[in-house]
Amino acid sequence: MKGRAETVKRKDSVFKEIWKNKAIYMIMLPGIAWFIIFAYGPMSGLQLAFKEYSTKLGIWGSPWCGMENFQYVFRDPSFLRSVGTTLWINAGRLLFQFPVPIILALLFNELRLKRYKKIVQTVLTFPQFLSWVIVASIVINILSYDGLVNSVIAAFGGETVNFMGSAGMFQPLLYITENWKSAGWGAIIYMAAISGIDVDQYEAADLDGASRLQKIFRITIPNILPTISVMFVLQMGNLMSGGFDQVFNLSNPAVKDVSEILDMYIYNISFGSTPDFGFSTAVSLFRSVVNCVFLVAADRGAKALGGSGLFA
Amino acid sequence: MKDIAGKKRKIDGVDIFVFTVLTIWLLIIIIPFVNAVAISFATQKEYVDNPLMLFPANPTFRSYEMLLNDYRIWTGFRTSFLIVLMGVPLNMLLTMVLAYGTSRGSYPGKKIIIGGILFTMLFNGGIIPLYLQMKEMGLTNHLWSVLLAGSVNVFYFVIMRSYFQSLPDSLIESARLDGAGEWRVLFHIILPLSKPIIATLTLFYLVDRWNEWYHALIFIRNSDLQPLQLVLRSIVMESSIVNNVTSAAAMETMQNFDMGVKMAAVIVTILPVMCVFPFLQKHFAQGVMVGAVKA
Image (cartoon, rainbow over all chains, first blue to last red):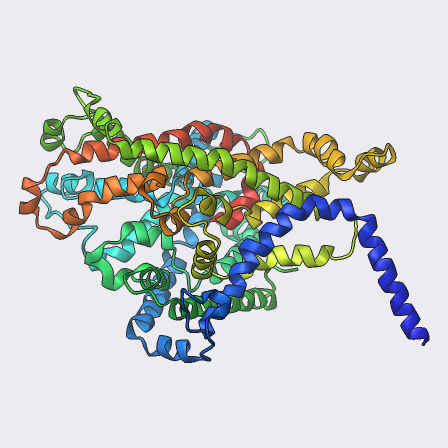
């Protein structure tokens, strides 16, 4: 009896609290409504992965079909191929993209011409603010048959290269253009970490007669490891995404075999000629779950190794 | 560089290496832009004769004239301006109210609201359910689908929230004592104190909205509502597919000067971003956290 009375009382006070704070709920209402409709609404739409979608019946009215969609998905050779492509491209990204902003930040830090440093930094951050549509247009221009790069090659007597249309060129093209666009911007976070390093450490090293390289490897890099670790965790959360914007704008039918990452596959099956939304939602759900699992796993891993994770 | 103050050091191998690498990098970024500008002002003959071009000998506005005669570019400008003009205030309003509401005080459900917002960073429904929902709501082929699809950027929300949290409580307490309600506190106390973060996030949202193409690609089939980015894409892609799969011999027969119009389209699309960039750059300090998550 006593317990019940207490619950009632607590409930009462909760309502009282809500009423007292009604203004704050009202102020947040537009934002909360947006999240419920446009973030959680689509999440409830993920039920389609277990349904046979019919346009007439809608998301909620379509009949359930169990794991049937997934059975088709995992038997589809182009799905499996796109998973492989995604993993392969992302392994390359980890190797050829992830370290570049770190190296760039170290270079910036060692550049002693202050004004020049400012100019270089400004220019290198700019492309981040352009869309992949623009960057791809610029890239297609300089890499075309009579574009700048091929003209230089020809001027030196070399054979012109079909950069945009050859499968072997596609992956290097992704890594180079991504670094072209984003490395300067990505370096900012590491620069901030470097500027937070205690100057005393460098002074002590100077007294001990440490060389510049020694200071970079013994002081700067160890001090920015926590930042590197956070960035690594974030990168792992994208394991099943491969940069749709970039791939979509840089690829063309000639490189279809090497460019169909999972996101492209989802796009093609969803918005192609005969879409099966149950099927493509199943693929999409698979992608989101894998990303989520890897993000959390990488976070745990980074913490277990003594690094910093995302979630405190 | 972090040597003991006042001590000048001699130029060593590291300096030369760093300078060289960064200068090459700088050129690799700049040259494609210069090349694009040059081609947009060049004549077809000059482009064919001298493809290494970094500045045209006889600049001409022909490509720009041809571009501006293409009605699609006007459709693109109109749509993109509408998306920016309506989208950015919507972004800012929703982000601000959520950031304010979750930044202080304690009330039932606060943790659930914050958790609910942050969870969407970790996991989301993906594009297909969103598309079907937009379709069921009758929003596809309307600008509202694009405006509402990306209304809150959770990272920007986090940045704004932590800024609001850093403001002193005492100011708000005293305003409360004077009988100010939540709206008054937000608009008369918090916002005037938050100008730097508001400027930063407005600029970031602005650029994001200007660069919007993905949602439009999926939600909008109507050719009268294509944003500039998609117009640019269709102008550039028109013959580049041919460009990629045909032989060099076939290229000879193609109208080469398309390239001038394409680059003119690229330049007019970049220009607004270039105008905003200097202001944006001033706020990089606040943007550092954005940098962490956007990279």
